[in-house]
Image 1 (tube, rainbow, N blue to C red):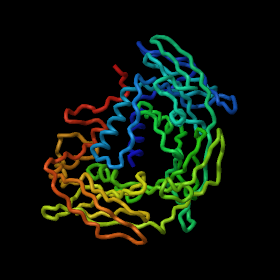
Image 2 (tube, rainbow, N blue to C red):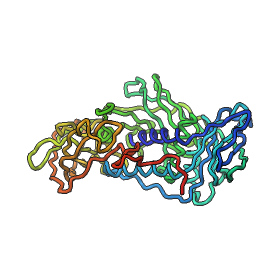
Image 3 (cartoon, rainbow, N blue to C red):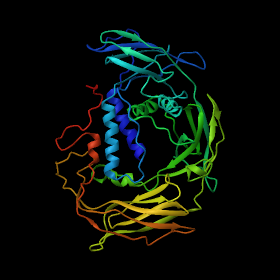
Image 4 (cartoon, rainbow, N blue to C red):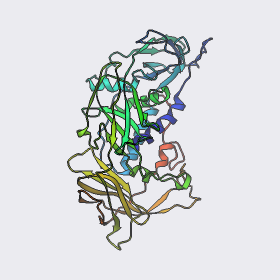
Length: 443
């Protein structure tokens, strides 16, 4: 879910940063900016890449390693990570253009500086996957990226940069339930077989290029369970399918991002594994089209874990908390769910195993008045924290049936924590000023 929210934020941000190419008579750039022109060619056909996306991506002044994901991160930490990602957008120049039928493009109003030049089109290696492959190969991102053209832009001048895009590999198949019926709506991606390579935060904006160009490096299974992921660099991958389950949804005052983020999707790896370590990797060569990669989602061995989270003081149900089951033998596997208004919870689709059940971000809350203007919120007035609780944990063993009665009582935390204000991600803070200024050139 976190990834989906972040991607949606990138899409919103990209609309502020886009600059569409124009054809015929070349338009002039605004004073103090430059123009970049060129052609995009398909490497496999040597023909023009028609209506392809061209991205001028500002060479970062500094590169910061992406921190490793923390499975125990609190809501505050999650929000801080997303805020940092959005701030990196505001510090990076990115200009987007589009080619015409002859493969030519014109990018105008480009702030002076050095830019990587990427071409993107469905079926061809995406800019993000290209960078990920370079990171996986050990490239030093503090130096110019190997194989990626750099153009220097000068104010009031026109620069030229031609780009060749290479056909990417693809993997496709069908996903089915254990009774043979198709699974529709599953979100398919691939991850490196050995570890998950993530480019530095400064390159995170390239994710929006995937979506806007149609080469998103992901796929959604159709009504017959078919999926196809294209535009991949060669390498060893594991196919992953995610299905969002039990997702609460609402708009306005009924939208609760904290509960949405607490509900993890059900994930299965090809051919039928819930743990990545049990998956079968596929090896993709350049431009390979690997078909018939079947995925099965077996529900027979999955169970639920339920219980109640309450106050150790007066035993009332705590109305806001996240319950996470962390597999003790696989740090990358966890299932989680939020509590309801009475403190009850049910974590669904849990494979057999031994887990540490962790209860975090527990607090008593109440809705803010509808006329509360203290923190502008696109999703309604939000909630007010009345009392915070210390985290709790206990061991849970899941065998061959559902587990009930996993009740936890938490001690009161003397330091009341403020409910994370997710509206800040969209602009709105205590001073009613945007938290992130999109598309602002670095000073």
